[in-house]
Image 1: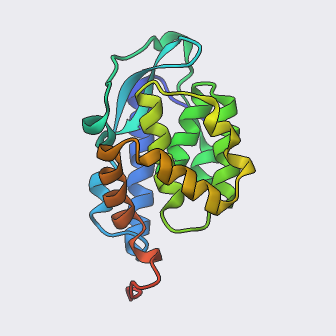
Image 2 (image 1 turned 30 degrees about the vertical axis):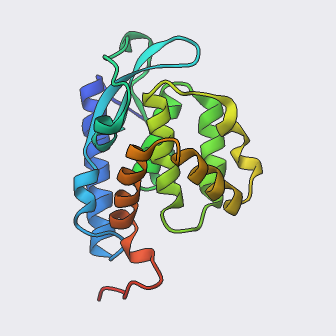
Length: 195
């Protein structure tokens, strides 16, 4: 289930290779446009967890310019550098990486919550939007229990909750909106299928 990595740099490289392969497939089959590659660059950021631990998390680089806080790297001697391959296989692209990072950082409650919510979301771009919102809040040290109530909501209620939350972050909203357009291009009903 987990693939070990020797250090954080290797972890980013493993994720980046996997993400590049997933993006190539999505572009080839018409789900995404080539511009999605530009959004899929990973980096690291220091975050402070709710329990006070300072750790380093792998994040999409596109979030850092709009983040309120970009932290220094944390103490990696106490955190495993294991990849949760099950999350990566089940949820392609950024959602899988977020879930793998939640498992690696021992954010079990958030991991379970996101996994349950992701499994029910069918609307194009909703899972991706929720993923970037969650990462943004983690990077900015805004970890609260609101996320843990999402599994009890319907897909429509999750969408309303997410849109309300995104309204708090206008800079993030524009990043997410543009990313979802390019990453989910082939799923929009008015978009002709590429042959």
